[in-house]
Image 1 (cartoon, rainbow over the protein chains, first blue to last red):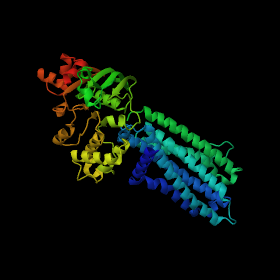
Image 2: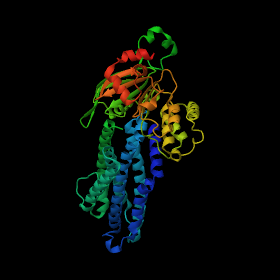
Image 3: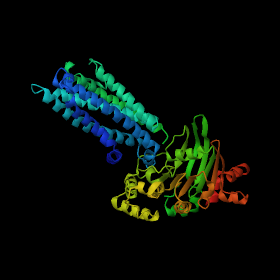
Image 4: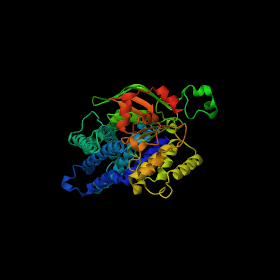
Amino acid sequence: MKRLWTLTRMALHELWISFRLIAVIGLPVLGGMLVIAVPSDLAGVTAVGGAGFWYAVAACAAISIASGLAAGTMAHERRRGTVAWMAVRAVPRSAVLFSWFVAFGMLLTVGIALGSIGAWLAATSRAEAPPDVVPFTAAIGATVCAAFVCVAAGLLIGIFLRTVPATALALVLGAALLAVAIVTPLRGLPSPTGGISLLAHLDAAARPIGYALQSAGVALAAAAVLLVVARLALERSDL
Amino acid sequence: MTLTSSTPDALWASKSVRLLRPAAIVCEGITRTVRGQHLLDDLAMVVGVGARLLVVSRPAESASMLLQVLAGLSHASAGTVRLAGVARADDSPAGWARRVGYVGPEAGIYPWMTPREVLDLAARIADYEPAERQRRIDVIAEHYRLGVQLDEPVQRGGVALAERVALAAAMLTDPEVVLLNEPLRSVDPEERARLLAIPGRRRTILINSHFPASEAGLVNQVAFLRDGRLAVHAPVRELDARGLTLSQRGIEALAGVVMVAPEQVTTANR
């Protein structure tokens, strides 16, 4: 654990020094702040539903970009030999991979949480009666879990491709998956991107909390599977 | 029993132990194919403790791949490797991390880090106590003349400083086996020769270089891999004896005349 924390701190420092940290935290925060700027005729049936939809769109963009950055980061780290530097010192490759996952996951969690405050404030300013915060919070939690899936997918892609193609592929793939989640009506079966889907269709959700919990569980399981695959791929790859 | 440079002095002094022909690196049947090309083909090689071995190859990627396989950075599809008595890279700080050092063509360190931070990280990973960590950093910083730049980001000193710091970090743990894969390409030749003259009679060093002549004086053995197999492994004096130069062409020519068994080299080296 001590070693993992050292590696995670280094990953956060690297993200900070290269301004990627600002993008990963700043984009969802900016998206949340922009929800208030959505014209009232586009603001949805209910204040919370409308805010949720537009914040889902913003989160979709932010998570896709974070996924692309995660892919580019992993590819770049392998290429410039920093993973090799660790590996020759008997640091397990999985520890390096997991430290990057934790770093991106932590930043996205903070960013999405802060951004959701902006979206919630936009919703309350438009609502006639005080809205129920629990379904919205549950949807945000499930969205964070969906973000973990995208980060894990990005890291996996970064193990196979060079920096630019990895970044582009992860960004496009993440955006496509999350966009599908936004435009598709809410279904009974939860999916890894179900958090985004729920956030975009809060008004239509019959049991938002249950659906959020199920989606979060599926997302965490999917992220775990992707990380295991990424670990196996990194173990087998040349550094 | 595997003898390594960390074997106690008293044991080393014994004649019977010396007769065991201690090996620092043992490769058996290493095979690795990349895009249909056999970079390593059932390669068997034994390198004695204390050897300074220059490895060159045709194709040139074979030697680099060998060092990467030895360092645990690339995987062989078949075969076994044993370095400094350790069969594979484990995550025990007192094992592999301290016994084997590797410096590749890329420094592999974050440019925003200072040399002190890099050395401190390497020492932490090797799990030294704080006092021992500090002592080692001081000694290595002095040897590699990092004093003035010790607390400045590596990027300010350019690639040459990054490469020096990478070598310093590799030597911090006083490793028994040092693998140098095209090291210090950006350092000026005189300084490079000084840095690569790594002390330690029982330290085993493998160097892969595209410019064998630049390693003159640093190595006492040469090996040539042809199509992934060991074509020759001989003391440098074999080159001199035949009027050949320490160059790719000279070593290849030696491979055409002599094939020295690794056991003989081990003995000759001692």
